[in-house]
Image 1 (cartoon, one colour):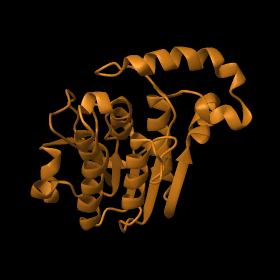
Image 2: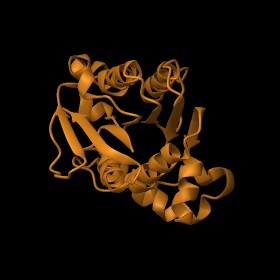
Image 3: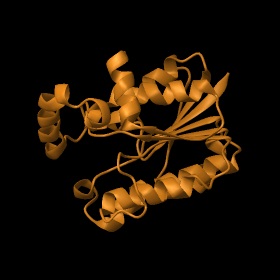
Image 4: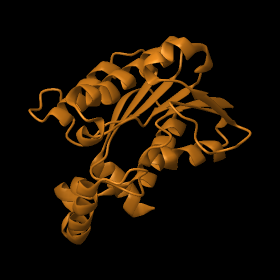
Length: 220
């Protein structure tokens, strides 16, 4: 029986992933770390409340086998490039470093379709830089998930995503073959893919592209 560590449990994917982890026979304990507690009570659940730039202070409370990172924001929500970089790069990389120092086995992290450290688009560039940084951490296995537009109920709805979802849903029948990766994918589908990847217990670095996530969603 293993221990899971989850960051970003209040987000679209994390909120879908938490109950899957609690229900999974793989885990005897599920640790959630974040700035505020989640409104969940479960015998497996341990909550560690802290500012995410102070993870080192609670390092010994974050000992786990599988680390799930669902942290992420938008430029609008963050309010500035600096604030966005802090959430989508610094906090993610710091979590990976702390977990690796605790000898965690696997890191499963949400990135984004189009992540590229050389991109001219700031969002995609930061995601790419994050991926490059976590690839340097000494986990036995690293899984990077690159979903396209995410569907689902968010705590803070994003108007642009809602408009995009309506348009892409209408176009979905046309998005086949090489265009499959542009289909929207639900937060629940990404969460399920993350748990499945952890259960596979493979090694090395694997990137789960949006087309793979979409195909799994269509097959479920």
